Amino acid sequence: MNSQPFFRRLFRKIDKTVSSFFFLDQWVILTAEGVRYDSLQWPLFHPIIPGKDRYWGDPFIVARANKYYVFIEEKIYATGLGRIACLTLDDHGALQSRQVVLERPYHLSYPFIFDYRGQTYMLPETAQNRTLEAYRCVRFPDQWEPAGELMTGVYAVDATLFEYAGKWWLFANVKEGQGSSLDALHVFFADDPLSNRWTPHPLNPVVRDIRSARPAGPIFMQAGKWIRPSQDNSRRYGYAIQFNRIDTLSETEYQETAEVSFKPLRHKGIIATHTFGQAGDLVVIDAVLRRWKFGA
Image (spheres, rainbow, N blue to C red):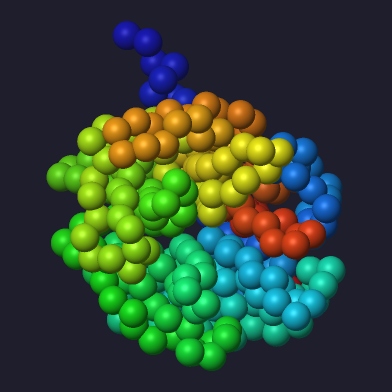
């Protein structure tokens, strides 16, 4: 009998237990100016770190009036529930203020922001409530009102809207039965982003791969290519960001090609990263930072 796998598992368990006593693995926000998705470098990023009683993740950035507004999931460890907060940054990405903008009695995360017919909307993840709920902004950035349910009775995570070829497309990882929410990308389409009648793509799940299925931020165009950021969850939850080029998208077809990935720097205390966004000259990501639990 080979005892090496047993001792490796035992060592990892001991290491994890000891590490959790001394260190806090905390999601934080980072910003960088003037970089592209295919040339990201960790030394260019500057962290925005919350207090040790919470984490900040899933950043979505909006540029308005020489400021940046970064909508995030803020999870307070004591409550175990995520809520949506907004970080206001100056034109170079320095933090000016923070405020909570949306709370519900269930978990909220991944605050996807989009504009439609002159109004701003948010589609946060509400999988714990088994819904996809849209909210309309009535005062930017801190007042939002319900604008309808896109889907009900579904466990869909990290829903990402994309307007293309005269239709709205909804990308989300859907957890079915005893399956995972990490490895099955589903696509739906409709004529209106606020519709409650979304047609499932006939190839669903269009991607079944733990390295690239789950969305990791808005789909964007760069250098004439549509790029879909996704999570690489192969080593741990939210391990790295994978950037995929959308080659074909129609009501009957879907194809994408993996281009580049952005991985953590464990020796620098960064052990995961899983959301990417950009607006104006600023790029925003999140990352798990290993911090010393004791002291400031």
